[in-house]
Length: 128
Image (cartoon, rainbow, N blue to C red):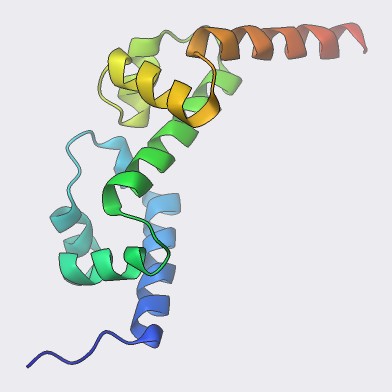
């Protein structure tokens, strides 16, 4: 019989999960799997899923969240990047995935977001 997955186990795993995701950024790999992340963390995929489910999250939703946030950061940093480059660098794989998930997350298209970034940069440049 397996020992129970305790709150302390979940908290420790959550800390290691956040550190891995923020420092190593494995979510940039389009083929990243739950099993591979579990191996990186030195635990089982079941424990990773249990830890995430305690916060009503799933591996897939968290992967998507990291990737879409990275896509937004890339577009803020360089609005001239095309969707294929942003999708590849953020781990989203394809421009279609980027377009769909970005709109779902932020309620606007990548084109609209680029335009708002460029307007902000232009306005801040004029106010110097």
